[in-house]
Image 1 (cartoon, rainbow, N blue to C red):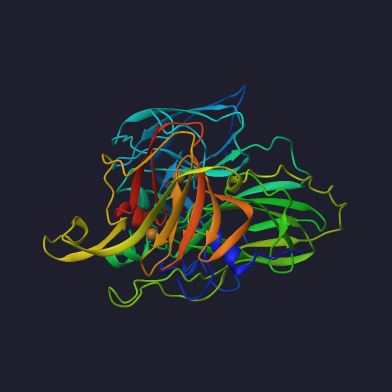
Image 2: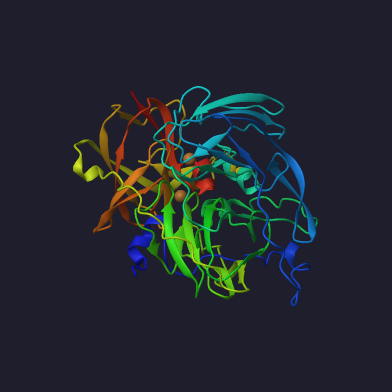
Length: 490
Ligand code: C2O
Ligand code: CU
Ligand code: CU
């Protein structure tokens, strides 16, 4: 038994108390959220698009869509009219051929978050732009040795990312295990949040302050549903693949009274699943949980996470709400079934501490005052700039040049009073130090939370691909406001 320590939790997110969590309590929702509302809706999952003969050939269309949320109609933006978009399932070695069509009124593109694939050309290229009304073809080759796990896709057009993800544009990607694990069933659980007005229309970010804090929608959804129900029998083993697709909301999840083990965070899997009592996901993070079910009714509870604030720089913090809320209900009833076989041990993860480090650099994630700026509308009013090493994003500038094939040590520091979940495309990061504390096990993630005024040290192996891509804060408003840099490997 090894519950996650507070320190370990800081890796996939952050722990504390105080930030907003008003899930299921939005204005629009109030009428439908009457007390005594009978049974919850049974969890549904998005359509699965799986590769065949080594190829996943499909279309993804971003467009306004009418969807049902609870017992109300809502107008959102969605991939293929589905909230979340379809789940893409591929095996290592497969190629994804995706025709993406943009039926929105703003430019967009496609990013496959967490996949270790080429950033060039028609692959995972965050610099592409698909104009309204246009289509673009993607061809993404997943390497033979790609780690299994739960990944996701979402638009990545700088300046529109938070809006488009908040509007409903996200979907899961699953890279299959080398051999199936002994579980009764698996589920994909895409967690998102959204704000809707009384008519069920998208409510928008709600002002500059909300964008600076990172917008949190007031309705928290699982697979587009409000508090769905999962049914199982005692003794079954569930594998939950959870994606935090919220633009800014951190999720601290617990399933009290159930036997929960952590199988995976972000990519690959842990050699041995670890018992956990809670797990924290920063925006962009995924976890896979294995639950050996016990009879009873257990809510999956999300507890508020303190992710700092504006530190008095712009008046008081705007994120309110301190109450935990239920994301879903696990209903375990019936006669016990025979327990599945033990989960076989997985391969030992690579440990970059045993390899030669050829470059060291520090990236500081900061906030400062800037004159003017489009968000404030005025030319001489000051606003908050979101920077990396003092600079806001410029896609034409190369901020970090790395020699292909080398291992680098990056010290990620945070000089601001707010947490920043730092994400690097293409190459995952091995977390080796959090603040003053060493991380003992090889811990791999693609989004690493850097706490307010804190620092985290990671090692990165720039293997397999050359080209340019980005790193950024995964509070998507921060990314859109400039907290993104470019890295060129060659
Ligand atoms: Cu999930 Cu650059 O993004
Ligand atoms: Cu990404
Ligand atoms: Cu940030």
